[in-house]
Length: 143
Image (cartoon, rainbow, N blue to C red):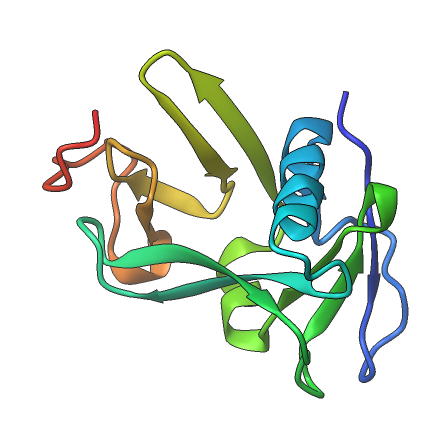
């Protein structure tokens, strides 16, 4: 079972619905990466940008200085997630997980807003971009 997280934002109050869910496996991996890189005070920035096989793609980077209008999410074990307002429109309600398998591991985002996604899970399309409910082809070769 995943832990729910609370949202803080300088422009709004704490909301009842979780903005983003981080699984315990993902939280542990984020914490490990922060420790290995010796940046324990940083947050994980999750963002959406144009591109990818399906039109939009996910990105992640460590952030030392969140911006004024970012949404700050406090996850378990002191992990912090920051999301810019535009990206939040696309990934609100999503779950971040970390999958480790024989074929390789990595972060995976399960996004209820995506109606079509790349086979490797790194890009997606929403209904507003004219997506359909079927998965499209993937040019990334990651399946």
